[in-house]
Image 1: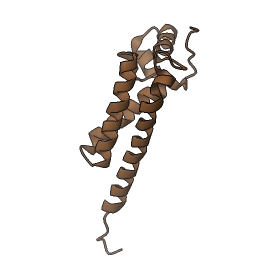
Image 2: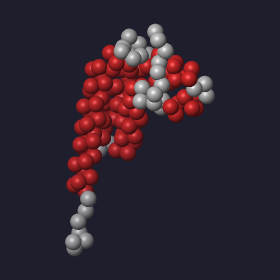
Image 3: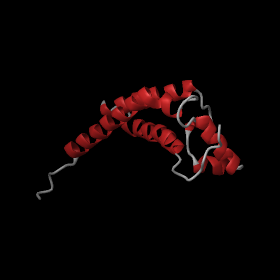
Image 4: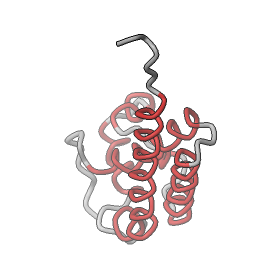
Length: 127
């Protein structure tokens, strides 16, 4: 009440906690990413994005419907690279290295995987 309180410790704890959650998320993606969205996975990223591109011919609208870095490349290497880049960004958040940039990277890389989860009502073509 005297005006000397700061939010340093609560923000420090929350930021590290968010970083640890992202570490767990990206560790799971590294482990299971190929089986889920890899070329031979349950819902291959390439097939899903081809369906989105077919349904929305305008590339900007297609990207807004499924915002993902997999538009650049949907190979197995890209799944692995994004998993490891996300993990590196999450560790950077935990270590407080460029926290804003690292949190943005975590968010966008995670969004790239979540956008493939068919949350927009777009269905991929049959194989």
